[in-house]
Image 1 (cartoon, rainbow, N blue to C red):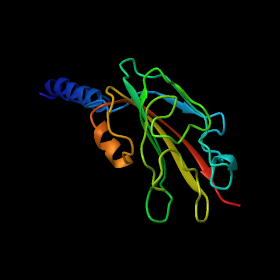
Image 2 (image 1 turned 180 degrees about the vertical axis):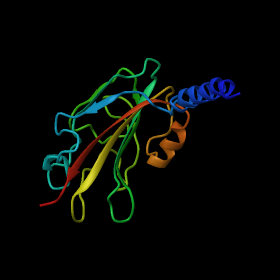
Image 3 (image 1 turned 120 degrees about the vertical axis):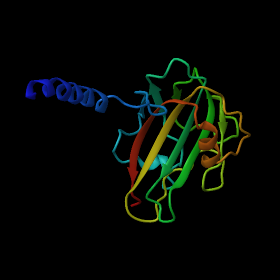
Length: 183
C-alpha cells in the first residue's frame, strides 16, 4: 500500500512546483525597455542646470529595446517625496513611435518639434518643470511607456488623464530615477 502512494504524491509535488514557477499572466507593459540620460545616471544627483536653481531645461533622454508593435510613447516625470503627495513635473504623450531620443531642452510648447503633445504639470504649466524641492533630497522618476495606440488626447492633459487612457495599452516601460537637493 505504501508503494502506491509515492507516485501520486510525487506527481502532485512536481506539478505544484511547475505551476508555482509559472506566471498566471504577463504583467501589463512587462517589457525590458531601457531609459537613460546623458545628464545623469540612474540613482545619481540631477545637475542643477535641469532644476529651478538652474536654467530649468529638460534633460536629454534616450530609450531602447522598444516592443515591436509600439505606436506611440508617453513620458511622465514625478516626485513621490513631495510633502503634499506625488508632484508631477512633466507629462508628454503621443510621442511618435520612431522617436527614441529627446534632446535637452524640449520646447515647452503644446506640440514640440520632436512630435507628440505636452500635458500640464503640477506647476500648472505646459512642458517640463524641473526639480525644486522645498527641503531635503527628493527622488524624480522619469517613466517612459510604449503604447499600442496614439492617445489622441487634447494638449494639456494631466498625468491622471493619460494614465487612464493608457490602461490596457502599455506594451513596455522603463524608468530612470535621479535625485536633487537644493543648496
